[in-house]
Image (tube, rainbow, N blue to C red; front, top):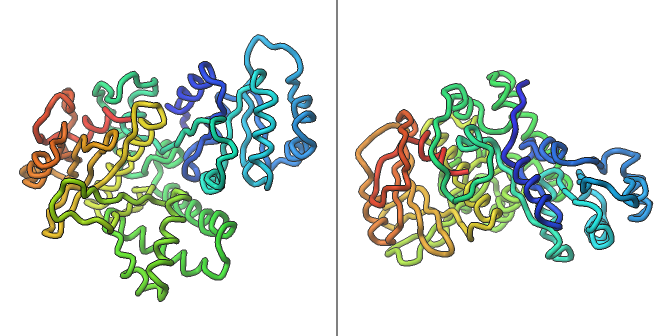
Length: 399
């Protein structure tokens, strides 16, 4: 299988050259976290390996000796801890190890999608790490893996093979790079099975798993749709509160993500129902839903990446009113509406709702992003009024 450098390897190398804090690398299963960390690490430790687990359990001093941290080196070592969250005392171990040896070593911590669940349990590591939320391949990463110096990248063309692979196989590294339809289907089934049989089993009641797995199927069939908890509850014979709790759990395990509505300064705006998107758009049969989900995943990667890189505080929202006026996405920058995005499969007349909400919210940009338009070498963000733009161009300017 082809191997290609990732943006996140560049980000981690830059982080360790400038900062003492640990790097926590979180993200979905099979997104390439371990591979990426190993490209920047000088030593790799996995909780799933007997010898590494033994060295960790014998204590911080023993581990430091095993890693040869007592001597001077001409290059700062980078230690990668993989799956360490499976250790019941992982936070206190890391806190002590970091506080003792921060002048001698740099530390990366990664693991399965459960790491994000356990990381939120307390603030004992506050101030000792920076979070890097890793995402699948995107158009922008396919054309450039350098660290952006501005929020918006210069537009660059993605080649036809990469664009087709993203659309047909998704952005997760193995299927994106292998580009084999049979492999992609098998990979998708295996990944979903691992999530439901391993990750969910570890953090939820076993007797609920069967029903929760049915919810996963229903959510996959409804990517890009509004989440009406009562409808799912009726199908599953559980309470809406239970469905809401399960959806939140699946979001934290990176099976999908919810996009909340924006209602400030919008008349008749919906306030409660989020929209839901699958993290892997490759298996979505409906072309319109797949296109919207692909763009949603790109936008989420951008807003989380911009926030992690310190460009500001970004959020992804959508707008819908009680009179059915809707725009697919709104990017909020430092609590203010910034960019409106409407997604279309092919070129049609520009949405009147895009004009309406652009005027109402006074956003800086408003784009109707069209999937089937060819690349145009123009800076989409140079336009201030609502405009139709090719997805290939617009997405290349994100992250």
